[in-house]
Length: 157
Image (tube, rainbow, N blue to C red; front, top):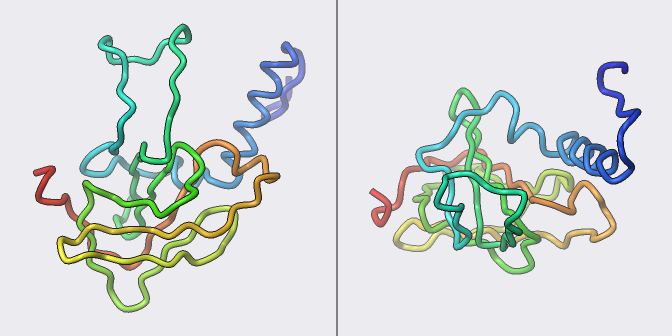
């Protein structure tokens, strides 16, 4: 098998792997060459007590389930939303101070997202319209934040 080519495997497995590849082509910058942020994320979905997910347990993520990574230099922050964000996404564990020129983009769309920061510093992202036929945007959704000073919110310290 050539590197990067999926050939001999079951059709369902092949489609799963190809789908992962499409997602990574669009959103890979939030995964590769990144580092964990101060907390891994937030949201209502919890892992099994063993600390790992099981193929026997179906996990239903919501748009409130968020995961966080950052670039090596710390200048870019990624918020991975585990389901389609159909309404504004509020980051409870992140305190944000935007600088001049701060921007948020949904990867795969290159559309800037409107955002607001409340008095407590909580960031709310208003997602753009998402093309439901785009297979690369059919799993988790990644917002790239640049130009923000970020810290843990007081509730998570």
